[in-house]
Length: 145
Image 1 (cartoon, one colour):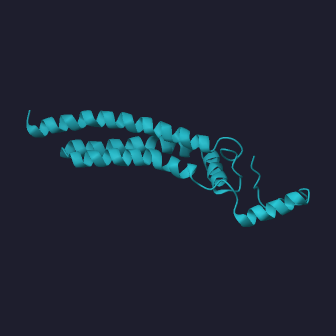
Image 2 (cartoon, helix red, strand yellow; image 1 turned 60 degrees about the vertical axis):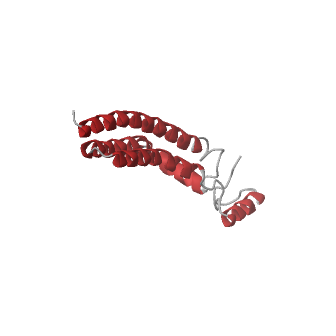
Image 3 (tube, one colour; image 1 turned 180 degrees about the vertical axis):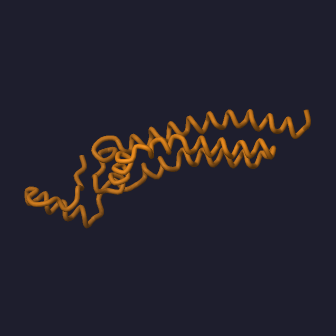
């Protein structure tokens, strides 16, 4: 076996470990995102008209987004690792690892750091509506608990 053949074999073995790591990170990321959207609009009960509440509503209406969040990191990693094995390139394999982990965890980190309260103007209008006994149409759903 040539040096290039050994390098390809090592990259394939490395790739198997990387794919397993990225799949695990994808599951952690999806659960982390799901927990942000647990409850009435978000965790811990974010206002429905907050940024978190709106993102959670989109995820609820388009459940395929959960599958994309689970599958995309692994597929991107497999593609980059196939290119790395073909070229016998450790630098491409490293990019595959970094890209897979970023695709697995960045969406969850973003979702969990979005504002979970309404804008000040919406909150002020909601509070005024609530003080009036909730009569008339609700200006914004800023209820949290």
